[in-house]
Length: 186
Length: 288
Image (tube, rainbow over all chains, first blue to last red; front, side, top):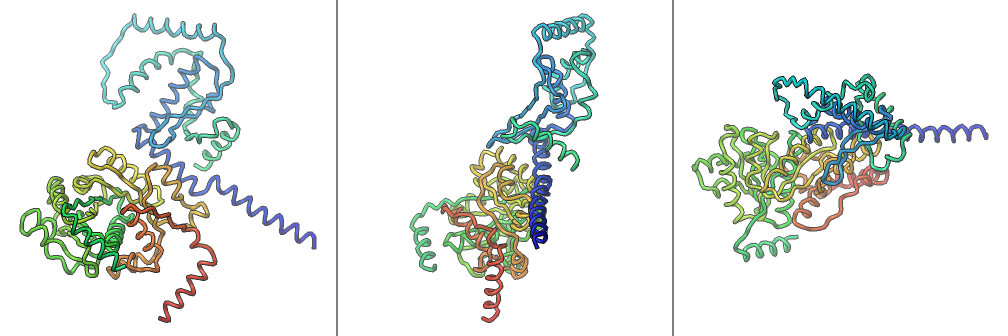
């Protein structure tokens, strides 16, 4: 008799657990996430390619100053009332030494100077609408040659961009789990 | 109810300089219920004693006349008015039941270029003198038809459903409305809400849609098979006192007038008790 009850209890509990689990990847959640992502593109005219590029460039730029978990970097748009905010969440692994930073910057400056000397300004076609992006890209493509700051292979793999919910900025492990979940669901 | 209507009427007659509110009902996506919403809000406003005219701007694809059951009464259309084959007042088709309600039908044989933005603006200005509400039924899409419909309006109701494509298009429409100086305010009407699907997390909730679009809400309309039968009969569902969707539309009309009406609790409808209740009221209805 006891067994029947415990069995029933477990079954009921299991049922609720299942439904809870379902919530994470429910049709509703998938719809919300997909929609938020697509609306971000619609509203900003940023295609996934451009977002990826922005992400790459941000990693390049920021990794000059801090050592961070490049894979866990999250970039996305968030809605705050009527305004859109660009949210960037970066788990910092280690602060860099002053000397280290300066060395990188110096090297970069040198390379820039070199490039300017060479001054091979080829006429570029400005077909791209995003002029601002373009100019940024020019600068960073210079530093692309800096082997210390960037390793391309990591970033190219990471295309998934999550929109970061407000409260979760502090709770990193949770975030990662969520990331994985949404990736597998795709 | 009739006393209230009379009272409103006299007030209207007294205030000679009537300046009606022009509200465009739009959605971007087709098939989300713009025309149904238009017919029902218009009828509900008229039932509340307001003088209402509905303009169908969906030239070539008119349907508002069908939903109102007025398809056989149309003599002149908006194109006839614009091309001066008749006076504006001649083209207004009075509703079968409610003398407060009129329809300015779209032409079925012409395309969207037959009426210009300026002409629609003029028509709206003219109608403002005689009506409390001018509801403009907007065609789907964001092309000229949309531009025309919006031209004369100062308020907008964006109809959407809790489906991705409808919400996305609504977002686009909201962007376009925000860019229009003449549109002073816009509100969201979420149609075809299915409480049971929302409850099981199979569908986006009203809250989700509102959060994503960040627009103020004017109405939540539950999915109701009665809409189909009411369309078939040419009788807006607001005239059906028992219908939940009808109730929801009546509430929308009251909110438009300025009343503070709480949103219907749709979840109640899926409870066993209400199903039992519904069953019995259904039985009673049949007996009558």
